[in-house]
Image 1 (cartoon, rainbow, N blue to C red):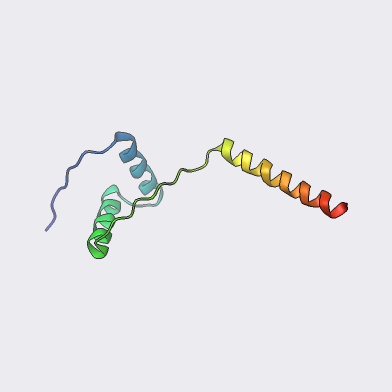
Image 2 (image 1 turned 90 degrees about the horizontal axis):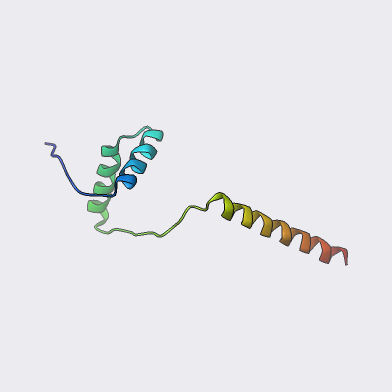
Amino acid sequence: MQTTVMFKTDKKRKEAVQRIAREMGLSFSTVMNEYMREFIEKQEITFRTFTKPDDHQWEGAYRRLQSMSKSKQSRRSA
């Protein structure tokens, strides 16, 4: 027997989940049901804090790696 679940969430968060699920070939309901199944099975919830790096952060990391590489090369030459 199925039932309907209603809860409030941030509109942008819901839209993001729907978009990602659609890209993965899943429905929003499938994603939410899997989260609930896992919660029941494990009887725990994990909160993670992670921010996806933006282009500026990737560029900075790339420049640092280049600098480190040049530094190692100059030490080897000396």
